[in-house]
Image 1 (cartoon, rainbow, N blue to C red):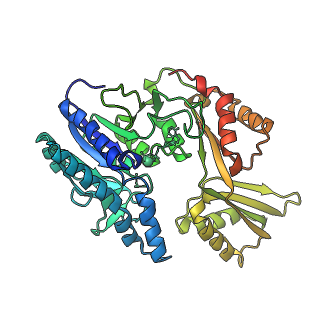
Image 2 (cartoon, rainbow, N blue to C red):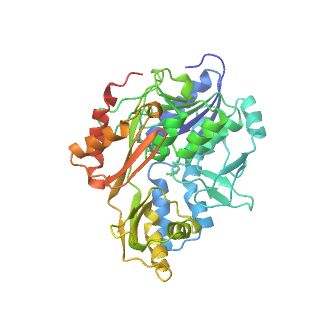
Image 3 (spheres, rainbow, N blue to C red):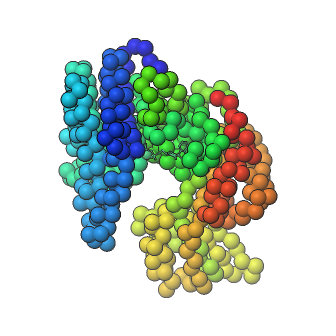
Length: 416
Ligand code: ADP
Ligand code: ASP
Ligand code: MG
């Protein structure tokens, strides 16, 4: 795509480095960019399945495994990938060296398991690039102000790559993955999904936060705030083949503003419903602040007043792996807040349509609700923002809902 010498951050995900064969292919892709005279930083994920294995190890050891050591354990998969690729490149005569997060350093906030990158010391990286060394950096990891290893949340290597691209003023940040770009919906769930040539930062931010895990949400936020030119490409194409991919860019660079650009599904939420709460001011605030104080993110919230106007039902969603804790906290409330029942439902999924064109087009929500009801898909909870509409449905109907909405909004025929 580029003809003058460029500075490029190339990130490869877990499947892309999942075997000896795949790591060899990554080395070929990196070599092809080095041969063009480009300055290259490579950011790597752990080999596919490794992070899950490491997480399970900590769980097998203890139910209350300490967070700071958890990060030491689960960041190690990325170190293996970085050393492996660097060693391989050197054996092929390409000058490369690995640099771990703490060596650079990539400084993060203190919160283990989901730290935020605060600063990246880029001077030495730039010196090495000027000497034509390829730098290989494990994604997902950093160091906090206390000198402890931190990790950036699942899928965090995308964010490492974008933040490094911003810090070294790279021309491109290329996210190589197991699909050849961002699609109108998850191509593994919707057979007619179509690759988008371009998607705006705003739409990508919504798609990512609503379940399109092709990019970690924070990576899109970081790219948007730092004007990083972000491309999503396939690591499975042959060397020399056209890299079409998807460019994530400013809305202004996209001529055709579609009403609906994509459909996403998130299956990692749980729904908590408190039934028969006394209807008095401050109740919702009190319940939600108990969750917030414990660091539990509440997403959708609905409150219904009952017929007698004396009690209300409150429904909210939280990440499913925090639902047990959220339930415990709500049960702890019952002494000062009376309610009749508490129901936790993890068999839900959130289906969302996203598009910047929704800002100027009324009636999209009613179309969405009608199409779902015509297909016997019951809507539980609704939430909207300027460029997205989300509904909560039964998890078993996830693929049906995705495909129904994808067909209805004719996303398979979308023109790039
Ligand atoms: P990596 O290991 O490279 O980080 P991920 O598994 O995190 O890759 O992300 C790639 C996956 O994202 C794809 O295999 C695809 O199933 C999923 N995905 C979900 N929504 C989309 C979408 N709209 N476009 C492309 N891929 C998507
Ligand atoms: N290995 C980490 C994970 O599986 C980070 C990443 O791959 O981006 O979440
Ligand atoms: Mg990923």
